Length: 508
Ligand code: SF4
Image (cartoon, rainbow, N blue to C red; front, side, top):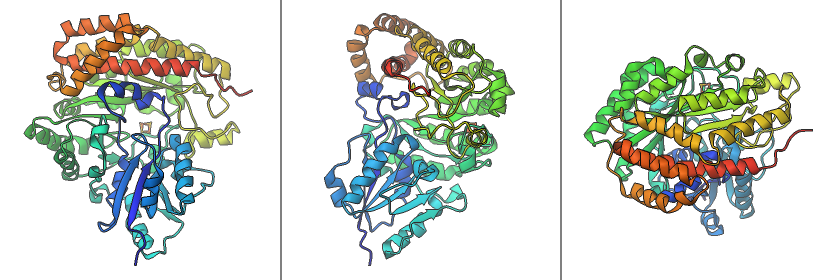
């Protein structure tokens, strides 16, 4: 008979004050976190129904002793960037005498021993969770369970969304595919999930959306795939027609955003379908305008296209393009910071996430740098900070830092003039999206009031007032989007000032 009756799922705290956390914008809309822990609620779907399950997301409230006391076993999942809080949660749980189970990218890719964990569930959980749960209940669980095969996503279960405090999140999350057909040198996605993207059948996806809809979720849904169009044929033929019909039938309850490779711009039919399914934001790994650096890192899809034109085309389909940019490639020349700035401004990318190249364990980049004896240490997973790169860069650390600071302090300058000018560019194109214009909702009204009371009196107040006035007159139909950009700007402003104030940790 099992002694495991209560399982506590814990998502450790993600470090605050990062670009991706958006916590300074979330305050305006009364939310605590931008995203739910999708991995943990997916794992929860494999816990047998007779076991009680609770979830603590430390990004809403920190773990309490009473939470741990309730549990027989504590399941923790974390990304590399959550390493420190993962260790705290594992230590507290172990000290309380609980069975500690760990999974997720941090433990799966760690090269160092991890303390205070009884059982590791490594790789994609679907392949091993049933065996693990059976063994755990029978009291004979092994120390390590590693998924040997990549599971067929047709047989995955619907994540247990009902475990979430939905109202605390700005967005929900679903996953359609895993894997990517490209082989960028710095990326571990294709190594971990494979080069042949696996997708869920449309009816599986709709079942997940139905679950969210039944829980009364309305608004943003992040399609968390690393490359949503990794299997373009399936997305076009199977998923999007079903998604469009589903949205239409329910009068468009969700707005989607996702990540995709830049070859999205090659396909008008795909862009048109995404627009009709109400995709309004897409993150694209642009990385660098330097063809030499793109060639070095194997980003072939970016080399094959005119990136500025491709971005403009996607924007013309009514989608905001968010961009990832990297400094620190071996082929970067001394003018790379200026070239990055010029590209970001001209392409009109409001949310440009600029980071230093980091060598993650398990990537081709890491292997090459080990061979070249250039690895300096393990990255903390946060490439958007003023810490130095985790390898010996070709540029001197001082030059790299100076370039990085120049990019950040220009694209998010103190007055936010450059940021708001990029936002204007995007807002002028959003009219093209039939789902961008909408009546202002209660949360948005609350955000607008908070924004008007606060943002005019900030260091960027004058640019903010001009931006709001312009778009109230010119882009009335998509004015809620202007409010969104305003409060996002507040976050980007605060984080940039904090990042720039950090003392860089340069290698001697
Ligand atoms: S396109 Fe994106 S997900 Fe695919 S390998 Fe390159 S960086 Fe990774």
